[in-house]
Length: 194
Image (cartoon, rainbow, N blue to C red; front, side, top):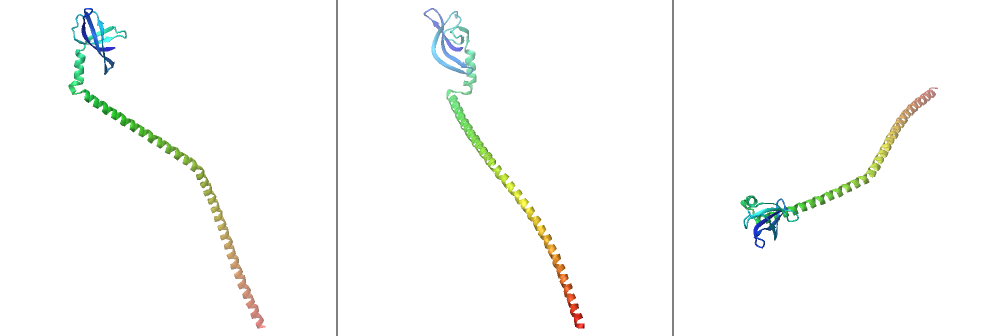
């Protein structure tokens, strides 16, 4: 695991030790730790106070060590050269948190709207299923009315035919009556002549 450390003289044994100052948690995340010293054998070439990056095993064994100069310069270039201050980062974090909360509220609102729409769709489906028998019943009634209407039309046609026949018979009776009257008149005329 990568640590930021400072080289110190170890006066008790006449050698060098590393005071661990910070630990890398992820690629862009570091944490300050309680200063902890580990011995560094065979490090005569490192000067007192030098900041180094040291890679440690789980048993605190030094796997690799290098000057922290390039790392510090890269840090300054990325963050401090653009005016990124701790307060700016706090403001950005607060803004990000506000966005996260807004997005959460929007997501909850969308979920609520989706649930309402689903409930409405279920209500519509229920109403449709309830209306199907009523519609079938209305269609049956409409078919019955049409059948009755056709029957009435047929009956009306029959009545009109019977009425026409009655008119024809009436005219025939009128003609027969006229003929009878003519015959009666002739008979009276003949009777008067005698």
